[in-house]
Amino acid sequence: MDGTGDGGGREAVRILVLGIGNILWADEGFGVRTVERLAADWRFPDAVTLMDGGTQGLYLLPHLETADALIVVDAIDYGLPPGTRRVFHGDDVPAFLGAKKMSLHQTGFQEVLASAMFLGRCPERLILVGVQPECLEDYGGGLTDTVAAQVDPTIAVILDLLRDEFGVDGTPRNAAADIAAPAISRDAYEGGRPSAEDACRIGDPRVLAALSATAS
Image 1 (cartoon, rainbow, N blue to C red):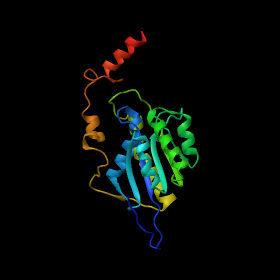
Image 2 (spheres, one colour):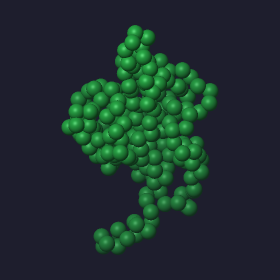
Image 3 (cartoon, rainbow, N blue to C red):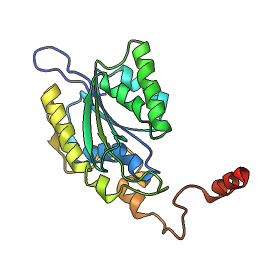
Image 4 (tube, rainbow, N blue to C red):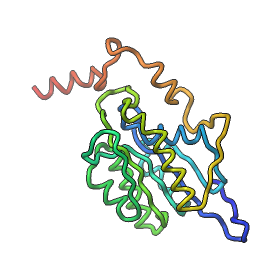
């Protein structure tokens, strides 16, 4: 984790910018794709860590324990028009994550926050930046156009938060930074997708067939 002083002998606030979600289910991958793009386009002081949290659940706990501030980026079901972005602070973060769970990854991340709080090692400052998804049932799909259009504006929000809340400025970079395996970077993942005729869009057809047979 990056750590720099502020020039006055004090240690810088350690900030974790965490993208969570499942890239296999269309707009569920919004948080991961946004932080991936942020890492590709910007560099920050050592006190800022950008991380693809995916669906790792409790495996993320050690990273939260060493952070003073946490900015979570995720697809959140606000019940609002697709592409709507909202920002929450403090106690509203775990409360809202628990109000409308879309998937197991959000349940898992709730457990991470609860565990960190129970241990007294939760970051002192919590911020959630979430965008309303449009589609969550396109297995193997990328972001919809509506939600993809919110990646750059959300990065602008994160940059503003880092500057206004923590006094941290980013520097544009020319070379991309890899926080995910090349094969699952957004361009490679979405560009290499088979056609709908060749790949099931709602899950493994073998599993779906078995579930259908069991239900009947």
